[in-house]
Image 1 (spheres, rainbow, N blue to C red):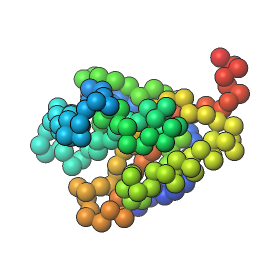
Image 2 (image 1 turned 135 degrees about the vertical axis):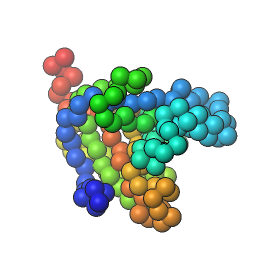
Image 3 (image 1 turned 90 degrees about the vertical axis):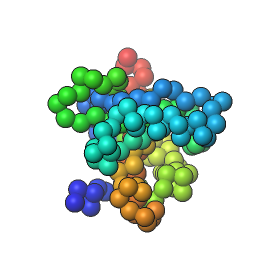
Length: 168
């Protein structure tokens, strides 16, 4: 239903309210892939009940620095957006502000190089810069389909106009 309305490969920039999120502990570069999976599993067990697992997506956070250096596989933390009125148990907020957002089809690893280039070109053309971490949230993944070409990912990153630096 709602996923059919999502614009694909179109960059949108808009003000977004603070978003309550559950965060995993920080991942370290010394951790093995197996330890990453364990951390992801523990995060999901803490966040979801057995019945709600498919209703919520868990994404990952890439640091601004790693994204700018094209280190796309350097997950910093896992996160799960919290919806609904009871967000008091949340441990964090993604800050309110101006966000660039793009949805794309397929897997993150297949398309992040071209999406990164598209984002950097857009930022350059519009005199903008990234000021926060990058949030990747799979909206349609292996829980909904076996066809990786129809996966939908949402990349969100906080931005500002370069001229705003001098204003603050």
